[in-house]
Amino acid sequence: MRPKPLEQLYEINTDTDCWEWLGYIGAKGYANYKYYGKMYKAHRFVYEKYKGKIPQGLVLDHLCKNRKCVNPEHLEAVEMVVNSRRGNAYKVTQEQVLEIIEKYKTGKYLQRELALEYGIVQTQISKIILGVSHFSFLKEIKNAAEKT
Ligand SMILES: [Zn+2]
Image (cartoon, rainbow, N blue to C red; front, side):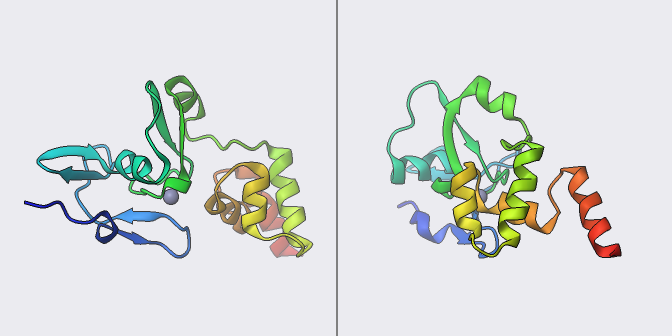
């Protein structure tokens, strides 16, 4: 049986820009793709289609933290140690988060531009701006702003 075209197997989330997999999801929450009888990790498959072969020994880190996502722009090939060190942590510091908020408030920057500048995905920028990221201090700032 011919494999289903990849493009029919994901749906683009317009809020996050994640390409959310509609096919089979494995036990750990990662997307799977069956191609001529063999199972592949869908995000690796899509990445290699658009960006070329993943160098040996490297793993793909989901910058958007969405395991179902197969958007190659949300994936970065890194060494295993880097991937585990990152864990669920953001790559930006607390100071940078505050900078991002300030810059966005000026209205001179697009979320996309800030994402590029700080090397994180737009999803994280919007979470930071909305105050829904896991930085607890962000919630405090947000609460303080709402009281005034
Ligand atoms: Zn994503």
